[in-house]
Amino acid sequence: MESKIFNLSLPLKITVAMIIGFWCLIAVFPLLWVLIMSIKLPVDSFASNPLEVIFGPSTKLQVGGLSIINFLIIGVMIYVLYKIYQLRFRFFNIVTHIIKFPVISFFINLLVFIFIVYMGLIIIQPLLSESLNAFFSNIPVLHLIAKPVIGFTSQHYEAVWVENEFYKQFFNTVIVTSGVVIISLTVGTLAGYALARTNSMMAFWLLIAALVFRALPHSVLVTGYLEPFINYGLYGKRTAVIILLVAINQPFTIWMLRSFFMNIPQDLDEAAQIDGCSPFQAFWKVIVPLMWPGVITTGLFSFLLAYNDYLVASLLLDGQSQTMVPAIIQYFNMETKMTDLVEAIAAAASITAPLFLLVMFFQKQIISGLTTGAVKG
Amino acid sequence: MPLIVFVTLIHLMDAYRVFDEIIGFDAAAHRISLQWLTYDFLMMDQGGNRFIGRASATSILTMIGIVIIFIPVLRKIWKDQKERKI
Image (cartoon, rainbow over all chains, first blue to last red; front, side, top):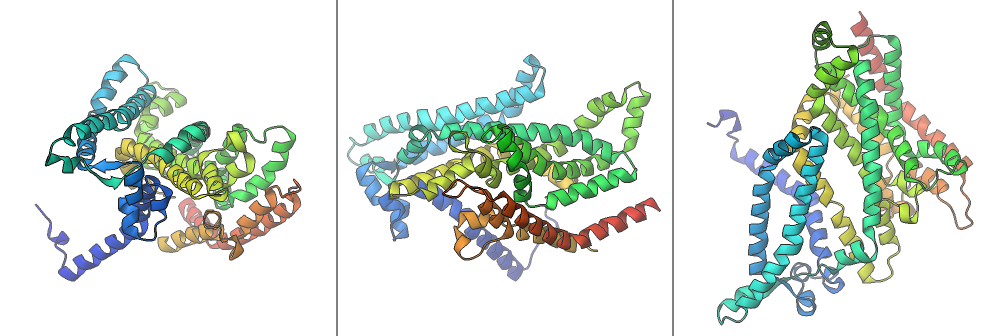
C-alpha cells in the first residue's frame, strides 16, 4: 500500500528526477568514465570523440574486445555471485560454529567471498567466453554475436599490479588502515563509554579539547611530530603514520562513540552489575553487544580517513613503504608518456574496489548506525 | 543556535583547511590554502632541507583561524552544558 504522502505532483516529480540526474552526472558519471578509460589503449582513452572512448576502435583492432557473449557471461557471473553473496549469513553461521570468534569468522567470510569473486570474474569468465567465442565464430550467422563490440584490454591493470608492484602499496595500506581502526576503536569505545557515564566537569573539558583537536588541520599535527620522528628513527615507517592518524582521528571517534553510548540507558549496566557482573564485565558482555552498529559505523569512518589520507602518508613515507593514494598521485606527476597516464587511471579505478566490497558487507550495520547515532561526520 | 548553523560551521572549518583538492587538481599556481603552505614547507626541497620553523608559523596561523571560526560552536556547547547542569 502506498501512502498518500508519496503521491507527488508532476512538477515535483520532474524536479526530483532532475536533481537525481544532476547528481548522477557529477558523481557517478566520472567514476564510470574512469573505468571505461582504464580498459582502453591510450589512443582511445584520450580520443577527442567520446564514442571512440566508449567503443575503442583501435583497442578492438589491436588487442580485441568484449563480444555479446562476453557480456552475457559476465551478467550470468554477476547474478551467480549475487546469489552467493546472499548466502553470506548462512556461511557465517557455519563458520562461527567451528571458530568461536565472530570477528575471525567474519574475515574468513570476507576472504572467501573475495576469492570467489576473483575466481569467477578473473579466471573462469575469460576462459569460458574465449572458448564460446571460438565456437560461435565458426557458425555462419551466429558469428555476429562472437564479434567484439567494445574494445577491452586489461594490460594497464596488469602493468600496475604486477610490473609496478602496486600490491606492495596495497599491503601498506592494509597494515596502516587496520592498525588505525583497531587502535582507535579500542581506545574510542573505552573512552566513549567512560565519558558517556560521567557528569564531572573534567569530562566536559576533555570533550571540548577533543572537538578543538578534531577541527585542527592535519598538517599542524604533522609539523609537531615530524622532528621527533626523524630524530628517533620512526620516519619512513608505517608505525609513524598509524600513530599520527590515530591522533588525528581519535577525537572524532570518541565523540561519535560517546553519542552512541548516550543512547543506551544506564539502567542496563546497573542491572548487569546487580546480577553479579564487575563493571568491566557489564561493559563487555552487556553494552558492547548492543553497540555493534555504532562500533562498525565509527570503524568505517576511521577506515575511510586512513584509507583516503594523502597528507600524512606522503610526508612520512617514501618509496616502498608508501600507501596507495600518494602512490597514485606520484603516478600522475611522473607522467612522461600516454601509457603512464592510463596506468594511473587504472590504479585509481582499482582502489575503489575495496570500498565497494566493504560497503556491501557492512551495509546493514552502516544504515542502522547512521540512523541511530547523533554525531555524524 | 539551530543545528543548521552548527553544520555550516563544521563545513566552514573543513573548507578552511582545504588541501586534497589543491593537490589533486595541481591548483597550487592559482590558489593555495594555509594547510597547503604548511605541507609545502614540510616537504623536502631540492637541497634536502625542510623548513620546519616556517611550517610551524603557518600551522599557528591556521590554528588561530580555526579558533576564531570555532568560538560560536564552543559558546553553544558551553550553554548546553550549563542548562544540563541546572
